[in-house]
Image 1 (cartoon, rainbow, N blue to C red):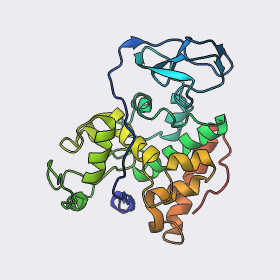
Image 2 (cartoon, helix red, strand yellow):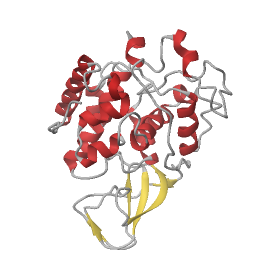
Image 3 (cartoon, rainbow, N blue to C red):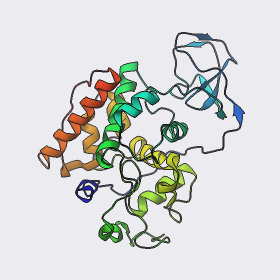
Amino acid sequence: MLSAVVATAAFLPASSASAATTAAASAQCAPVWDSSTAYSAGGTVSHHGRNWAAKWWTRNENPGATTVWADQGACTGGVPDFVISEAQFDAIFPDRNPFYTYQGLIDALHAYPRFANTGTPATRAREAAAFLTHADFESVGLRYVKEINEANYWRKCDYSRPYGCPAGRTAYYGRGPIMFSWNFNYKAAGDALGLDLLNTPWLVEQDPAIAWQTALWYWNTQNGPGTMTSHDAMVGGAGFGETIRSLNGALECDGGNPASVAARVAAYERITAVLGTPPGSRLSC
């Protein structure tokens, strides 16, 4: 049952999050960045739905992940160059709710350009696979857009926060690919993304890009009950198991729920197989 699944999503109080730009796209996308091409200073490319200009000569340095590239803002008309193709996304989530579009994920990537864009091609693919694994697990194959156990909605309001729950005590239930919940997370993520999610949490179930952005916010900026962000775990070599700890800590790890850990690992191995990428080591916690 979904209520049993989302009950494990133990989002702890948020720490300070990175600022993210959410300006509307307007410029035409430049030719897509190519890792084998050498670019001179001033050369312009598009990558993950944004244009980037080279500050000096560069080759095989990912826009958004290295300082050589200056962000020129969002663009339109580009070719998606995410490490996971739309066909692979469809293969991973064959029965997903139509709300969860591939384009929505692509549109969300600009908020955290280092996500699945840091390290070797295998590292980038494994990070994307790990992120989608937890989305698969928390939303049951992306079948659910919001938590279905309405009896638990009121629990996700922490009135001890100075800003309270202005959208109502029952408004901060789990939504989106990782069942994003709690008023303090809506406040922190909204501040980081330039969105008023504290007052309008329903945006997470109305806009696919915003739904994916909230998941990326947690993934890239929050340690949760762990010691590092999930992004740092995947790019730093701590492995998939550490991302489970960052999401749910002792609720699953260290013997808390070995069956749940095993299910996540199996899903991760399935998704990395779709991508043709070895899963790496340290899969469990």
